[in-house]
Length: 199
Image 1 (cartoon, one colour):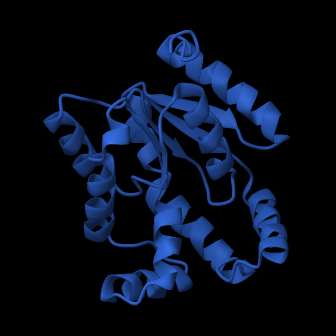
Image 2: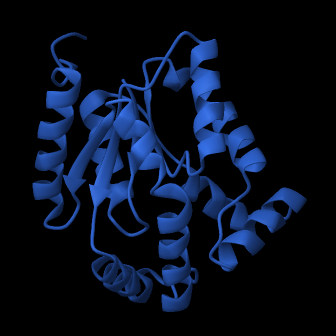
């Protein structure tokens, strides 16, 4: 099962990605987590990623494509994957398409969590207080929301035209959102795989 999960920053993608990954037995791959891990590294690439993230922007296509391709080539992605935070631009979509086509593969579905902007800003500000994440200042949060709206949301139309898009209300209790997501995803892909019946 090869999946993407999309939605505005703060919509709960990371939480739901973990649930989907567990259900389908595939790795959840978050580019955001990869980039944040670079904050503790002193390499030139890590420094560049830090500067971009601190300004509320996104890492370049070239850097991101390189990081993602290397991750998808790892052995745990043979049975599939769930990408969280990639692709963000039409060029990244084309690069991912070409990478998968080179392996005789294609995406099965694209999950989109739908959430009101003010709701997710409030959610991220609350998370900033409890988790101490320096990149979660209101100004930076709203920059990221606008970048998403301008650059990433149009990708949903690409996936809608391919009949891959699965839109789910991302607001509400975590378990409630998960149930909505699983129901919609199973309807799109033909049902959840039976992972626990065989050793």
